[in-house]
Image (cartoon, rainbow, N blue to C red; front, top):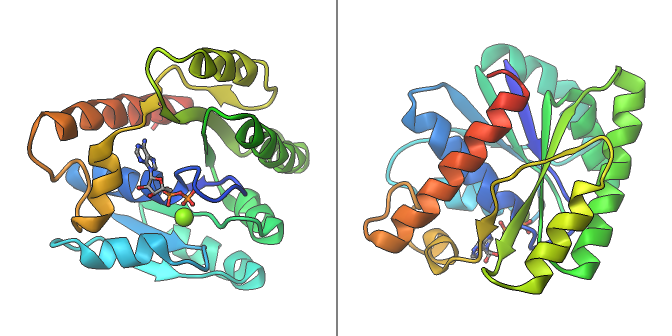
Length: 214
Ligand SMILES: Nc1ncnc2c1ncn2[C@@H]1O[C@H](COP(=O)(O)OP(=O)(O)O)[C@@H](O)[C@H]1O
Ligand SMILES: [Mg+2]
């Protein structure tokens, strides 16, 4: 009965990657989880279909359909993970009306920081209506170690109101890029690089759960 929406109107921010990895992280803990793929590109449903174990998913992209179906689905599942769309703010708004937690991945680049602030605006509008819900967290994704851009982006995101910036940063990692093509998540892959990525995701998801006491 916890609904988590991964949102950011910017394509390529890492929404599908986070949604699938979060679903797998919960699945590994034997939690009952359903992924709702709300993006027309269907990245997360194609990805989930390619795994050699089953994580159930449903494709639901129309805002009205989402508003009708989400409460019913949330009733039937312990965890609902929604992979949000790029660009369609109507759909993102619908998700924010039902989510307990919104997770916003953001790349450390100027245009991405601007698009994250557009997403934060929608979150704050929903919070004003719902009495501070959804809880919302931001994190830096695809950061490159030792770059000035990473530190600057982190400082900018720290100033954002209404959304908590998580300390954990997910770095640009080849193992993460490769996981989709391998029909896997980094939680299923062997080798040191996958292990490092796994530890970052583990830390990120733990911090996100603390925000909703889950
Ligand atoms: N931390 C990361 N390191 C390396 N590649 C990443 C990382 N996060 C996402 N990617 C890659 O970036 C691309 C866009 O990610 P995706 O999750 O599809 O974004 P979105 O769903 O927001 O459009 C994909 O090729 C994905 O593999
Ligand atoms: Mg996507």
